[in-house]
Length: 233
Image 1 (cartoon, one colour):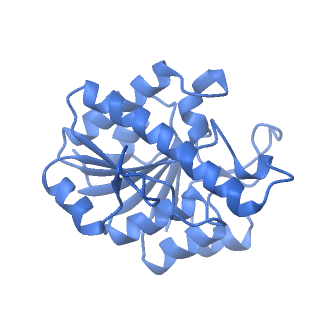
Image 2 (tube, rainbow, N blue to C red; image 1 turned 135 degrees about the horizontal axis):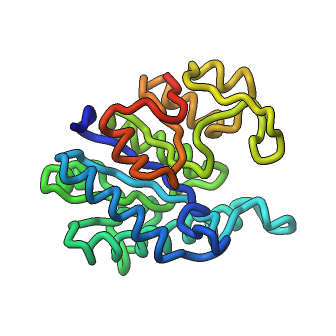
């Protein structure tokens, strides 16, 4: 039984790539859709933010002006959002994509009141283009939208099963945290989310739960209150 009524789910672009490492892995897309469908069946209102790293990351453009590179990243999030919308609607789940940049031929512009209306109608809303501004990550976009829609929690679906004191892929002795304060994350320099996103969640008292997307039914389990991953509050 779901313990939350309205959530934001932050997915990395890399998650959509699955084992392919680039682009969109249809089996991973299907896996995500199945979980979102189960959560929606429990009458949870769902907003989703997707990164664009499976297509483009601003930091890879070493000789490009930062604003141009970041705008390319925002467009990558639109491609992922449209792909997820298509997959959800193939399962009969009404979905809307709202973009922070105006691209009205493919998606609605982000309007808070319209997003809330979609939730009332039982639709899922995918928020693309981050904040719409360069120099801000999709993490910050997720925190901002969570604050605006009054989400009860920000679910951070990651490639690892929580937050560690160092990279568990390179350090077999890395220590996993079950619980952290917002200030712990900032002061310890942990790479859970960027500092701006953590600060925004702290100011608005939005808890963050970081967990492994690939664990079986992980999104459903978190929404139902199971303690997995790491909680920041």
